[in-house]
Amino acid sequence: MTARILVVDDIPANVKLLEARLMAEYFEVLTAEDGSSALSLVERTPVDLILLDVMMPGIDGFEVCTRLKSNPRTAHIPVVMVTALDQPADRVRGLKAGADDFLTKPVNDMQLMARVKSLVRFKTLTDELRLRAETARAIGVDGYLLPDGELKDPGLVLLVDPRANSQDRIARALKDIADVVSISDPQAALFEAAEKPYELIVVSSGLEDYDPLRLCSQLRSLERTRFIPMLVVAEQGEEDLVLRALELGVNDYLVRPLDPNELIARCTTQIRRKRYNDQLRQSLTKSVELAVTDALTGLNNRRYLDTHLETLVERSQRRGRPLSVLIADIDHFKRINDTYGHEGGDDILRDFARRVRGAVRGADLACRFGGEEFVVAMPDTTPDIAAQVAERLRLAVAGHTFRVAATGADVSVTTSVGISSLEGEGDSAAALLRRADKALYDAKHGGRNRVVLRAA
Image (tube, rainbow, N blue to C red; front, side, top):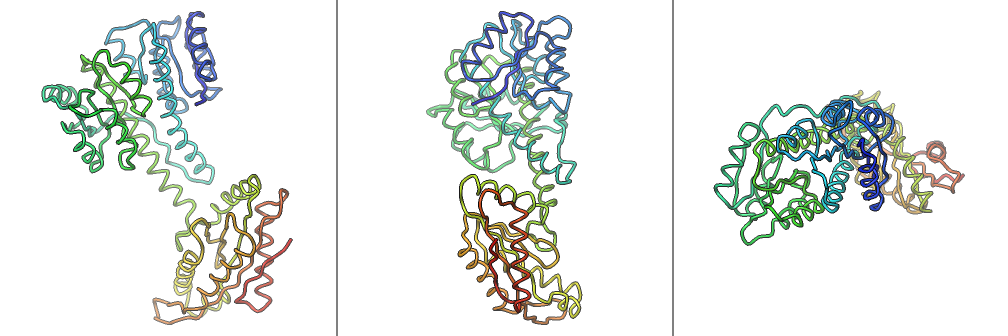
């Protein structure tokens, strides 16, 4: 695992110690001697995690964390406060400022590294979502990057704890921020978690006759529970369990006796983060679908093809694999529109798209190129195989009539298809499409209802 870690501390010896520990694990390390320098640095340089001292001259760590979390450009960066302060009130203050964890000096090496690796792993997930969002923005979609706002509605928390008195204490502590469902049986909890939209799962280490880490592992491996945050409640002396839990993907932990304020702060952070990532996924999915899907046919549109075909060409060239493209055009489509109107033409286009999907293979990318033209990109496909796919499409179109819904008329339709294939390192997506278009031109002028393969 590689990541860029920023260490912020005004004592050089502390900086050197943390730097040595992190570099031994092959992290890239940046340093800052005070809060102002740290804030300036993260504005200029991408950072994956910040280890932040609290007691510093000028701007203290609490204020630095507050500023980082209130800035949309830096709010997603995990912050771990590393300080000599060890009172529960200090931890709660740091967590309320937005810190992801609060470690007390001297820090145990294994605990520090497990926490760093865990937070970097979760940041990687968020970064992937944010990167896709930026891609969507680049193709003209806005409004999907949502801020990590306040917790306005109660969360839904699943508590897995065999002790009734512990269940009651935790539920009472969280009553103002969450509705808590308590379950004693870990296997029943696994099914429960998959059935309802839980925003946090709290797992006690004291499960009877069941390994709590096995439950955490099962929750992480199931598709329906994979992205639900988990918090482990451990007993004093269970450091090894905590370290292993973080390695398995548990988001956070607490050690008994529980401080109610710290429990509330940590649970609030996890619920808020879950909502942020859920909103990002949902709105990103909807936005990208709208941006890259043709509304009439449901196929990908030209905007998506232009972006993705470049990627396919680059990958095929890098791997030395074939790539073919076909362009299919509905013959005499203007005549269809003139006879049956644009609604009738739309019926034909929708049915044509359905037949395209049925004729091509699962790995092929089918797009509506514009008007009555459709493009299929076929990775790992030689010209001969591409010609077979094109012929299958031609027969699927010509073999059965098309129905115009408004009139009930059955219309005979044919298609002409042009094919081209990638030709060496100097080739490009644009050249590939040009050759396929020329082959389509030859098919049209050669009598239509035919497939033509175009050489360079």
